[in-house]
Image 1 (tube, rainbow, N blue to C red):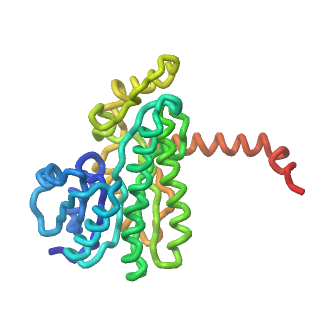
Image 2 (image 1 turned 30 degrees about the vertical axis):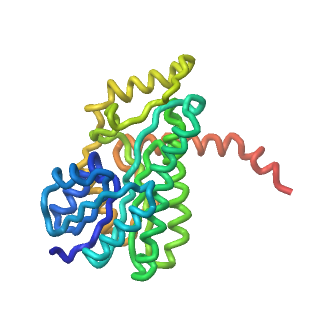
Image 3 (image 1 turned 30 degrees about the horizontal axis):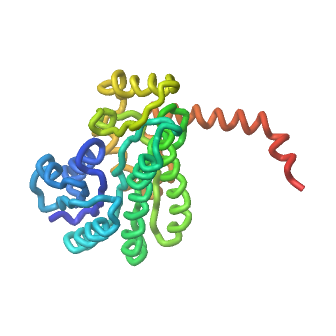
Length: 278
């Protein structure tokens, strides 16, 4: 068994998570990976003394607690956590029901909190660790009609990670928000997305963007999952990992677009902003 660092990766049955797990094992790391159906992941990855496939649902805190306990019992430690589990929910703010919205937050936000809550006692005890939370460029630039609730979950991940970083820095623990752009994975395939149960015909812009995401973007994404996995490993091995990491040239460009918008609005409204002081 390897003596290299131990990674704990959620949402590892497909896409970037599965690619990361395979790359880590190829480079000799020890990896515990979770999925709601571990058999498929086990079949895709193959047998390895350095690989611990775990059936766990991030929404179920007990299953996450058990998964972390099994990882510690098997490998003796956890060094890096990658919160990657989640799914895309399409639908405008009005279209999505309370249930649809809450379920997306349960998976994309409260699942992240469940993992953090259960791994932090170990990180505090060892006075080290790195938590990498996968958000999305949609968690920084939210102007995507029909993706409002999903965007909100990813903004929430970014916000809680900023606070987490400030809370755990003095404990020797790092936190990083990853904002991926479009990567050539199965994320945009119909089987990987959820759609509004009650669509409203008036939302033409949202439907046009849906069509673009479902028909035109899949297969044409600029991001290479293999290179994305290598970038995450590079982040984890750096001495001073960043709090914010925009992954992909498209993500980098959209981040600059948002920063320009903010700078322009700050400048345009500076006098009014400052007029509210005593």
